[in-house]
Length: 190
Image 1 (cartoon, rainbow, N blue to C red):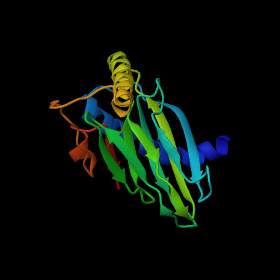
Image 2: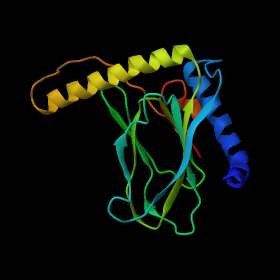
Image 3: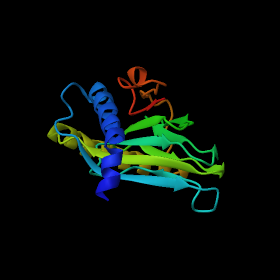
């Protein structure tokens, strides 16, 4: 609907600007060559089975990053928010996501929309591409690492693999973009 798109342009422009600034802090100046919104949609969560959350997932092979904007609602909700899993070993971050908060995610970051128990939660979700060959190569490498980590985790769960004394580095997430962008693959503004 062209009228709806026109109405949403200022909000989409603000999301684009926030994503670009955050992405370039994370990946370096100039890493966003040509920002493209691959897909934009609104999700509604209600406290009913199969409508109250979106289980753990990544956003797709061609998505360089995502934005999740918590929207205002006439029916305030209980619960909700976003959980993000990052690093090796895996660290869990939970973001409450009040209306107006913006969660930015790098590609291949596991996350989920947490269950609500009352009310309605609305979110604007945007999938971005940055049109950068270097980032796309990095994305492929990260996808392979993510798949390898998932296979190793499954082996470990099944008792087929024991890992002791492993030395790894983990990324940490901050509450503000400036604090999180240099070290983390996710961040929340709000």
